[in-house]
Structures are given as C-alpha cells and as structure tokens.
Length: 385
Image 1: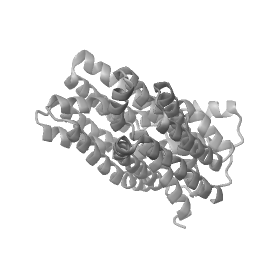
Image 2: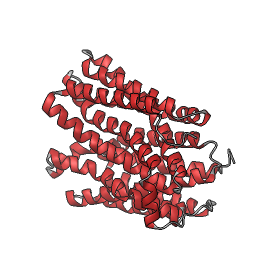
Image 3: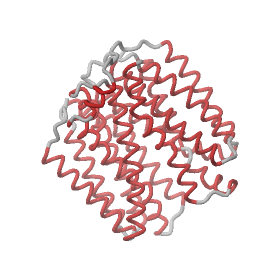
C-alpha cells in the first residue's frame, strides 16, 4: 500500500494505459505499408488514423457512465476484452473497411479502459494525492506512446498478425488480475438526466475546455511539425527523433506537474506549460535551422507535459465540485482530449493549406498565449484542490 492505493492496482492501471497508448501510436509506421499494399489514398490513410480517437470520443461519456454505475472493474475488463478481440481483427485484416472498423473498436475499448483505470485509482485514494496519481498515470500513458512507433515498425517486419494478436494475450492476463483486485465502494446512482445536468455545470465545462486547449496544440503540432521538418530538408528519422525525445521529457515531467498541483493550485503549472508551448510553437514557425526546430519540438512536449496533468486534475476536481462521479470525469477527459486532437489536426492542416506553415504555427502559438493569459487573469471557477 502507498498513499492508500494498493501497489498492484497502480501497476495494473499503469500497464493498461501503456497498452492503450502504445497501440494507438503504433499505426504511424504502418501507414506506408497499408498505402502500398492496399492502394489507400492519403484521405483513406487519414480516416484509418482518425478511427481510433473517433471511437474514443463517441464512447467517452457512455464509458464514464458505465464506470460510475457498474464500477470501474466492469469498464476495465470489458474494455480489455474488446481491445484484445479488435486488435486480433486488425492484425489479420486485409481490407480497409475491416481495418477502419477494428481501429474504431480499439478506440471504444480505450475509452472503457481509460475511464475504468482512472476511476479505480482516483476513487481508491483519499484525494490528497490526486494530482500525483494522475501525473503518474499520464507519465505511463506517454511511455506507451513512446513504445507505439517501435511496435508498429516491428509489426511491419514480423507481421501484424503476431504483434496485434499478442494484445489479446496481454489483455486476458490484465483482465484476470483486475477481476481479483479490490474495488472502491463509491458507485453512482444518479440517473442520466442528473448526470447530463451536472455535466453542463460551469466547473465541468471550464475544466473540459482547459484540457482541450493543449489537446488542440497536440493535434496541430502532429500535423504541422513533420511538414516543417520536411520543408527544412530532413526526413522521417529527424521527425521521429524530435517527437521521441520530446515525449520522453513529457513523460518525465507529468508526475512532477502532478505533485505541484497537489501542493497548491493547478493553475500555475498549467499556465507555465501553455506559455512554454506558445514560445516553442512560435519558434518552430520562425526558426531557420533544423537544430533549432528540433529543440523547439522538444519544448512543445515539455510544455504539454507540464500542463496536461494539471488540466486533467482540474477535470477531476470540477466533476467532484459538481457532484459527478469520477467515472464521468474520465469521460469528460476522453472527450476533451479526443475532440481537441481532431480539431487541432483539422484546423492546423487547413490553416497551413490556406496561409502557409509559418503563419499556421504562429496562429497556434498566439492561441496558446491568449489561453494562458485568460486563465491567469480569470482564475477559472474550477475547484483547485
């Protein structure tokens, strides 16, 4: 036991989010393979990439409601079984419709496991270490995102059947362990109307918007940065290096940001993270050399790592202040993350097409700076713990 949380629960929850993010991120190295073998267009490849977050966004609130009403164990085990089955289907698929459908189901599974794991950990704690716990899980999630591209590259070499088929085995093991873990007794009994009414309250809406801001940045950077690096004459290796080092820094900073949020308001680390991201994104747009751009890419990840955890804690605190179960807080988190990712990707790509890469990056930087200023001056009405 540590801080009221059974060590085995923390280990299982961490492994769940690692697996979730790893197979979310594993698609990138596989896209050229699918484009070549299946004759996919760029639009079809984009749909395949977006199918996962689309499934997560659609299932976010139902998954949170399930975790709140039936308990996190049901959500976790159901999500793990769905993830295992859909991953096997993805690994053996040779048709784009099956691939899209399987990845969409993986996204739904991710919403279930994420909602269940976060609810389980937060409900098992007294509330004093909420930011630290969220930061720890976010750090493991980022570690999973780091593992994703190498897993995808291995799958391209040894076969998607073996790598994605192994997800079923891991999921069954995790489901079996989860079945034996003690479950918190805080089950929600509010009806759908009561939940929807609470979701519309100011603290929840503000907290969801706060989490959506860095998610929008993340989505835009994911589209614009590879184009900017390519514009400077570098290839996939430089792109991968920048994102990998940045993700490692982000993962290391997430637990620290959580501890800072526990010691005081989450607002200071959140605003600091947005400010760092704003400067870094602007630097990507105006820097003339590849080394400076790569350093700035790492800076965007550092900024994200500092502000994602406080924003997630704000959602949890806002839900608690509005009388919502933590399962629904996880649902709001999933919607804000997935919606921001999709919105940032679309806006970033459209802005680059219309006004150029530099202007699009500077516009995102200005958006982040304005958001940081608004939060700092307005001190949003979300419980700060």
